[in-house]
Length: 348
Image (tube, rainbow, N blue to C red; front, top):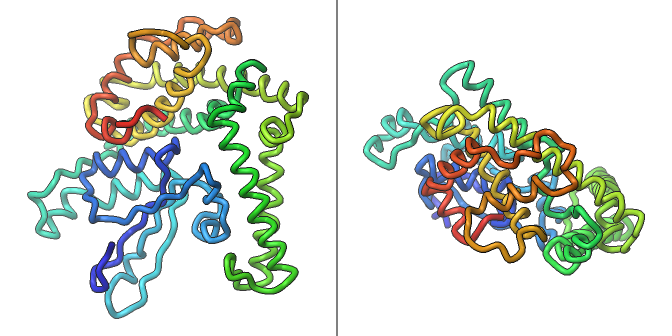
């Protein structure tokens, strides 16, 4: 916790089980940030806390991670500090990379502290390669979050309903309805202590947000809350498409990675985006029926077996499984101390 006279700090809003919230956690370690450099607040996605009106004022997308940073021009003691929120992992990682480097440390007289390697590409060609890899793992066609909640068969779906996917969707749906009702109540009966809207316009904006969000989650809610057979069939079809997207993304990684790391011998921003995506894909793969009871081997073997599932039999990028190149790349990523700390309790 910051003391009253301490300079204002950034605050990272995160959740340990989130795919993309893992990216800034990796970056903080790789860049040498200390526990005192910023505050960390947990937003429990399982409870739907990211949908609360108070959090939506920080991040209108209702996602994690969010990094709230003080605006430099307002950090002196003579003025009130103003803040801005960075609401996606790409902008957050770029900010963390630029905000701690050797020149800044030298200027502060901290040149002998923990090294702060530059993670951004040094060349135009490197940036183009980095951007292509980052774009690939963030593509909706290979969405790692949907992969967790989807199912390739109705049998897998029934198992999901009893496990984390079912709990997650039901809790999220309940949270959306709860917060929507609170906002509606505020609209009908004046200000609410919990939501504390500052104006009628804010209330109307929140009402529209909840309406749109609930509609966007309709397929998952119909499957996991309403037990709709028709929606279940659509989910199974959509899941097959995302697995095909995973195979295509692995092809991009296979062709795009140039050394032990994405851009060669040194870890870069691109690696910090690939790690969370691949970790989630492997976590989901390990729980699939074809991997139940498998003993020994590498964690990436589970993905290899998933790619060879009959649903991908006609997909060219899946038939050969995980390439030796991608396997070697994953081994390099796992060797990083940052990886071992962020994923100490297992892949997620």
